[in-house]
Length: 149
Length: 149
DNA sequence: AAATTTTTTGGTGCAATACCAAATTTATCT
DNA sequence: AGATAAATTTGGTATTGCACCAAAAAATTT
Image (cartoon, rainbow over all chains, first blue to last red; front, side, top):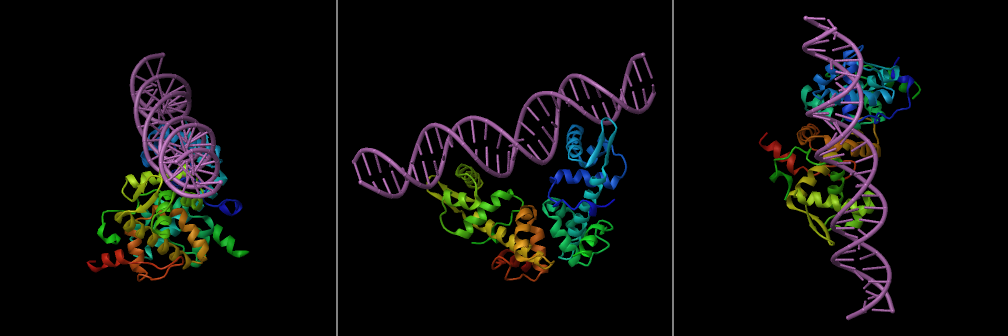
């Protein structure tokens, strides 16, 4: 399942911190535990629990209390967009004199406020690059957009 | 006076909304009144008063109660950076298939989270363009940075 | 099964942003 | 000038995002 089946989002649905949670959960893969998220994001476990509950209520995650979370279909599709957005923006900045690390950390600060529309335009303007500075870039959604331009 | 005399800032000092206030005040020029800001930013005048007080406390504005505000030297230098940042980022996005209007409104959403270092790098990588999509771009600061590379 | 670890709950706090009502100051108009 | 109107500020309240702590609850380990 990929994001092309959920065309109804702007990319601005989630706060910066929630974006971090989802990206980590997808990159980790499978069921992820509260403690692990807390230690990676460096927040109190109670903060993690609360955020996971919010993401679950909004339909991005399945949360089994005391057991862990995993992405819903929608959540996975959405998070694929989040990761593509991060990589496209990071790649873009490296074309303007920023190192990979600089680009990556710069983008972390503002990516949550860049719309899906903008990313799709940037992405096709760049020719749907396959490799970013922090990993491979999947284009299922933006290629799809292109097809019936 | 320009920002080169205030090298001690990262560009991340102000919240998105405060950036809006300062940019408007500089673009308007001279002494600006609460009501005018309120109607342009579409907020209650009491909200404007409070924000102006915070910006004045932080040294960006002189606020004469019931009379209006104007930029301090530091505030003007800083706001010149804010406007350059906005224009550089907007121009950048127009190189990736966004229209001027799309670029401008997209940038408004995230510009407050883009660092001065990144802007200076992007700016010199672009060859210090003189014209953005929303006006002329002044380069006193980033040219200065260049001089003693 | 008892002890330990993990997770959740409930409470609190702060920053950013906004509104409303009431009070104050300034401006305008007889 | 005095009354009225307009602009501004003050004080109070609310929401969202994000964080922490202490205590309770559940799961795991020994």
